[in-house]
Image (cartoon, rainbow, N blue to C red; front, side, top):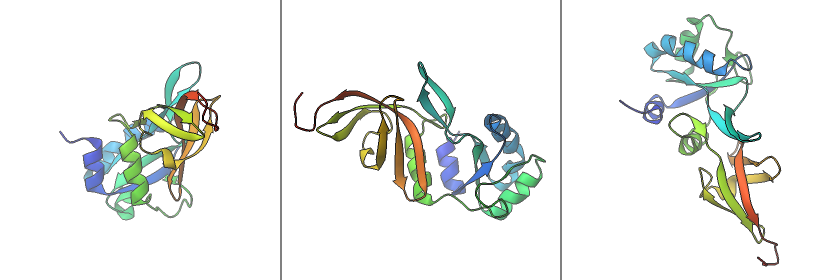
Length: 177
């Protein structure tokens, strides 16, 4: 059986769809069957977030990712569901996510479409991620919130997400330990 990533690469285009907040997983599940005829799928990407412990929540609350060959197939498949789902941004025009954004998201999500938290340290003002999906992606981190154990990652133009990052140690910029 092929993984979600293999299937998504074959389908090639990901579209963000707006749905009611709190219903992301249910909508993604109900949309899958009508899209099967157009080689599509739907899923609710998640992220680990710290709130008195790590837990999973939607990466984009109120949105799901729908994969399809093109926007016409997508519109036809979604019309069969009867669900109030519309395109993110301009509700009249389905525009796919940029390929580099999709590739980056695929690289940091696990098999369950969740971006797990990362761990690292700040040494002399520079982030060094030792564990998790952000390891090797330090350059895309634009903001770190140590109190909330999170960071903003902007891997490419048009994509900025908040993901879990636990900074276990910070040394002064002067080089002390």
